[in-house]
Length: 542
Image (cartoon, rainbow, N blue to C red):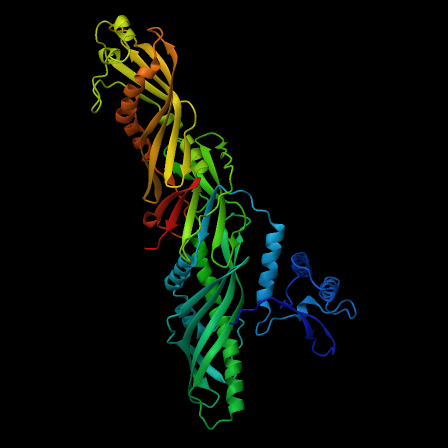
């Protein structure tokens, strides 16, 4: 089906008017509301400097009260149609422009771009899974309640349905224009008394609007404007019959059979696609500490290249209130340079920080082992090699236990190619100064250190593996052995964090962070890339 275009030219002759003036080739269908027309006209007038004649034409259009009221304007919106279309495309344009002008989009907590690669797969798989054309063909020969018989044909049957070829195009501001090309054979007893065959090739076209369901908050496709376009028709009716009689019979038969047979197929396919959005906003566990759910912020936005979904994730502590996402500071933007038709998910560092806040208490550790990895024995004798004051308080070698607590929520930061996890907390060492007594604190240090983060996906969850980047600060908060220079402990604490603490952090992180559950997406195939302030998943098809 040819696609209509908005064309605004000056100096052309208006048919039947005999005068030269502005011609607005807009293509608005009868169903377009006056408010939508006015929205488009106001936008047109604001975006360019028109000649006085053109501006006057826009005003006349705006002042039009009703297409049936003579003298109330130059011409009604409903009288315009772009060449070769039924006007549907400008209705789409009007809706798109009005949507852009009237809907403000909140700052998202995550972004998803669906390219044509995923949409092609989903529609094709829905068509294959539903076997809808075959089912429609099987129903065609059955008598339906309230359906009138077709004159001139009995025992109607549909067979030999061809494998459909599906073509999709994004329609900015609306959704997807869908064309299903197929063919079939219609058989029956003709008015001539013999067996009749009609072999047809056809296109089924419709615009699939992408909306946000008011009740569920989920994305939902809804079809409108379904049309069946005949590409070719062949029949075994006798060639000596009058062509006009044959054409009239075929036209009557096909127009009664095909729309009712084929158009429900579009709706049935969308039912399959819409089912795959069902789990999108369900809460998903983050370990035992809480949940996250991806809530759609607004109606999905469609451009000429992709559909974009803005999410406002809700991170909920177990039996507590949601954790507010930190202000990102900068707008979340997809990097450029993606392959045409590809799909991406963008997760800001602020979202990952909020999810990790659920695990904050899980990062607390109490290490009582004396021998840890490649470290020297964790005793007061070893510690005295860094701080002589320890040997005065503990002349005999005594085992040490260490307690680390994270006092602030963990924070993730991202710069292109590098991601860091920041920990602010305390490190306290204890020594058993007397057998049978509780260990006594030797000192309490405030620590700030960074971990380098490597990302991967396993079982459709985001995995994080860390290694120590560096110890940023070390300050003494209390001490039972008197004053000492805590900087002397930098090497000792750095080694301790690497050998004793980082493995604990990585164990905690194995719970994984849930990713949006939509369209049966397999994230395990995604390519991950750390970009400015966000992690990008380039989604791949299996």
